[in-house]
Each structure stands twice: as structure tokens, then as C-alpha cells.
Image (cartoon, rainbow, N blue to C red):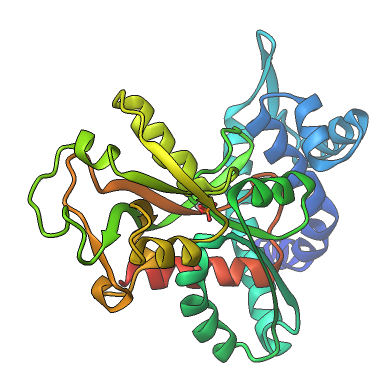
Length: 317
Ligand code: PGA
């Protein structure tokens, strides 16, 4: 009886120190990356480490646990049954760790940090509505918001200049994380007193026959409208190119032509700006706003907090 008690007691006493020396977070991250990428080379690239370092980390973890964690299957590296167990535990540890980082940052008065955002011009109509309450909640945060057209925002994304990007037409790249968060209907607009205003089910050809006011090249709104017209085989007559949504709205209201704009650029009652949303067949174009960032990049705490805030706000709308 005494023996059993002593044995249990011994084991309990020695456990914490044994766990401490048995593994490191870096080893768990290496294992996770190797399995997700099905190989050592890509995992090493992703973690910015050398391939031998990754192999050693995974091997040391396997040695410490006394069982192989990965094996090869053809040219791929796959987890063993034990590896699966370790991974599922590792993922829970990572989640806990991320939550802990967040709580610690909160304790420091969330986030005397900086939120670096780049958004397409059309997003300027709703982004302040998200940034306002977020910064009110976290007064220590400084926001840097760059507002440019779609192509410029994509350039910033390629150069990694910001933490988070807001756009409707993300580049087609497999290495980007996309978080859709809000509908972005694109609507045909004309002056309030235009002949097509108030007409029902206007044929697309009739709309395309009107002089069209276009955004500048590089605008996502323009890309989406051009793609739609091309798909339908209609070629509208572009009358003028203007560099902003506001310039287009004023020109349309002044009767210079019609345009395709995001519904977000218009007030609830467009007639307040002298405009009317037309009922044209094929419209509205149903597009979506996305938060975009490189999937391999761990978002800084402030950016992650803003992303979560924006997604939950959008879900509640
Ligand atoms: P933009 O925005 O027309 O201002 O470029 C639309 C988008 O690309 O999301």
C-alpha cells in the first residue's frame, strides 16, 4: 500500500519537470507545418527555417515522446496515428496560446499598437463605420488607413506594406486568406430625372446605349462592370473617365451620363444626391467585400482584433 502511494507521489512530483523538457512550441509548430504542407521543404519555407532544422525539431519531438510522428507515403509526408494525436493536442495549445496573447495584450490596455489597413476607395463609405466603434473601444490604438483604387491596393498587398486589406476583387492567388464580410451590390445609376428612372425592367441594351461614365483604370468597380458587360456581349459607350466615385455621382446627377456604382456610395435615398438607381435587367451585380491577407502571415494582435470585431459586426447587421 505504502509502495503504491510512494510511486504515485513520485510520478506526480516529477511530472511537471518532465513535461517541461519534453517538447517546445517550436517543435509543435514544425510538426504542424510539416503535416499541413505534406513535406519538410515547404514547411521550412513557410517558417523561414532551414530544412534540417525542421527535421531535427520533428525528430527531437518524436524521440522525446518515444514514437514516430510522421512517415512517408509516396512523395508525401503524412502523420502516423500518434502524430495525429500530438497534432490535435498541439492545435488546442496554439489556440490557447493565441487566446492568451490576446488577453495579455488586453491587459496592456489593448493594444497600444498600430492598425495598418489599406482599402479600396469604395470601402471608404462603410469602413469608418467599423473603425469608429473599434477605436472607441480600444483608445490606445492608432489607425493608419490607406485608401486607393483596387490595383494600388493589390500593389500594396504584393509589397506587404499593411496588415489587412479590404477589397472586392482579390487577386487570384492560393496563398491569400479571404474573409468575406459584407455584400457589395453594384447598381446602375442615372440622374433623378433621367428618362430611364422609374422604368421597370429596362433591357440591358437600353442602359448600355446611354453614355457611360467610368471610373479610372485600376478601379475594381470598373473591372467588375466591364467583365459583366463583356459576359453579356454588350459594349457600352464610355463617355468619360473620372477618378473617384464622388466625381462620377456629381457628373451623373448633372446629366452627363449613367454609371455603375457600389450601392454603398449612395445615400439610403439616392434622390438626395439627385440620383436614381435604375431597374436594369441583370443588375444588381452581387459582389462581396473581403478582408484579405497573406495566409502564411500571423496577423498582429491589433489586426486580428479588428478583423474579429469587423466580422462579428458585419454578421450582426
Ligand atoms: P474601387 O473599389 O472601384 O474603388 O477600386 C472596388 C474594389 O476593387 O473593391
